Image 1 (cartoon, rainbow, N blue to C red):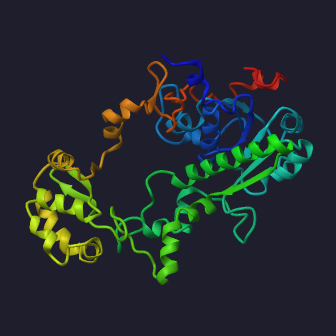
Image 2 (image 1 turned 180 degrees about the vertical axis):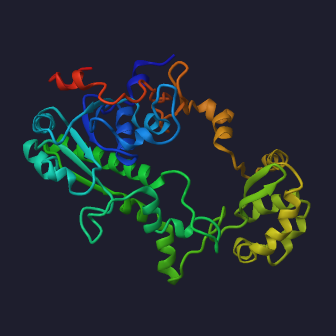
Image 3 (image 1 turned 120 degrees about the vertical axis):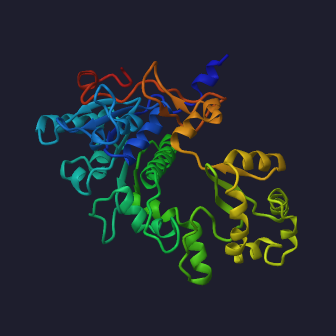
Length: 389
């Protein structure tokens, strides 16, 4: 049985109205998180074409896209023609009188061009929290440049440490910079809301894709600070730890993590070579990492003779951490994913990923799929009652 406290514990933003002047991934991801926490999110799109993400990914029978549903569920959707003086003025007035938070990731300079920038709207509404989600930040030589996730993975150095040394650059396979920046925006907005309760005033929050990308490099930056050397790509492994990577089996790959002497001793026994622990090349982690090529040459022929399941069962029994490299369908069908309730849908609709947080054991639910373009125009534009749906 779910208690009332459990069912509402996640809704800390109930009563907060958010206007999203956003598109693509980063800002929509931030506002989706806020919607899950109880905020009323109003997504503003240009009439006719809407958000670019409406045309990305795979398409459902109703014509909506998988990308757009993933990023824009649980929101109200309206259209505003910024070139129409009346429509633009309505949006300015609405933000000045009816809104708690505005988040924008428009092309640099565009929000200010229409009088929708942070400086304009926070003067009209001193309690407003205004979040800029820039590409390269609010100042600097690249501040006016547009940005997308793969550009930032390149600029930020992420691609330089991803993949195998000597091979072509590889992008991390999910929009880690976009969604990461969205999360930083949420953190900044939540902090600003907390300060607002004390001071009664809002503020302008700035985040950017570039800052997020370089911030993910925290360990690599510290490493360069020690010796000045370029961090090398590690494939599926990690610097300074061995064995700690994916190994090929008969039916796919299995990541094996044995980063200390105790776990390595168990692994060596499972692989039929307990004597490896007495080999000076492998008797401690620094030596194993220094001689990783030799260690892998011994391990790989043994591991590839059996299936992932075979080795995973043996390693589990011995207490050695391991994980199969699952495809997305495999991950979705994994009993652990199901047990946690990480996939949500309404009726027979598309399955979408849930928020990875629970409150008093309850995960925020999926309430509505993403809105059609301009679906809530009449509801929002004709209503001056905060929180009305």
